[in-house]
Amino acid sequence: MPVSRRGLLAGLALLSPAARAQAPWRPDRPVRVIVPFAAGGNTDVVIRTVIQPMGERMGRPIVVENRAGGAGSLGAELAARAAPDGTTLLAGSGGSMTAAPVLQARLPYDPLTDFAPIGLVARVPIVLVLGPKLDVASWDALLARAKARPGTIDVASPAVGSTAHFALELLNHATGANLTHVPYRGGGSLVADLIAGTFDASLLELSTALPLAREGKVRILATASDRRVPQIPDVPTFIERGVAGFTSTSFTALLLPARAAPEVVEAWHQALLAALADRATAEKLVALGCVPAGPEEASPAGLATYLREEIARYRQAARLAGLQPQ
Image 1: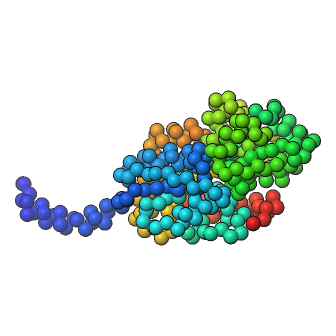
Image 2: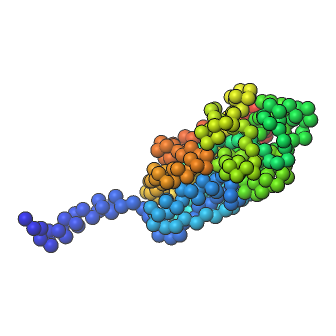
Image 3: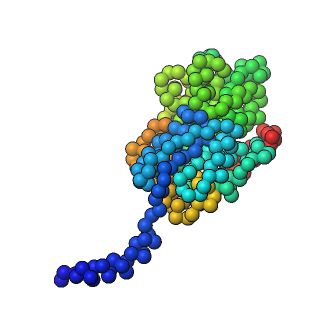
């Protein structure tokens, strides 16, 4: 039996409050994601891979704003102080969210209270990369040379307090290699000098090192992972080469300012899940050398737990390496 116009309107009126309650939040202004490092580094590359499908779902393009400085703390502070209206996101990483709280005595934000987690995006192992300046065949050979001539081998990292910096300090502690740290202001600027042979080697995220190795510009000597990486199966792990238990993994995550409304957080969470579930996006992340986050990790609760655990792990690592907040 046909429904009358009056009956249809009455039904819609009854349903409209529930429909409005269930309607997902969407941004009504341009959106930016703050990447607290220079363009071209791991965090920048990974976040640019996921924001396009996220922006399409949210109906707004997302602009990347690179704000390098302070091992990621400058950009993270900017995001923490932004209006909690859902139009400013932070691309969080080990440097800004887990290393900076351990190494910086006067950090202007708290990674656990000044942000609303959206979810983990991806993890990627740290690898030791040789530029053209250093000609050694293996980690064993590099270690032997480093011990024979302490302090003469330069190893760069994207920044003081970065995941790679922590990895270097722990590697020195575990092996007595006495490798000299050369800090940069982001992976992008580091790469050009690595290729040019400005320094001997670098500890980098696999996502940054992998395309350079495929082009023959650098050589990956070892991975700081618990097993060999599928993308470079011929490269041994540090553990295989005798550095017991040595692993180091960088991560990329998305967060909002702490006072963001629950419906805003949930809308961005669903956009992230949809992006990671997209086959093309997942394949791009894997091709970069990343391990895309699973649904549990890519959630507000999952990321909050991950950050707490990582900060505790970094504090322990800092004690072992003798690093003090400055």
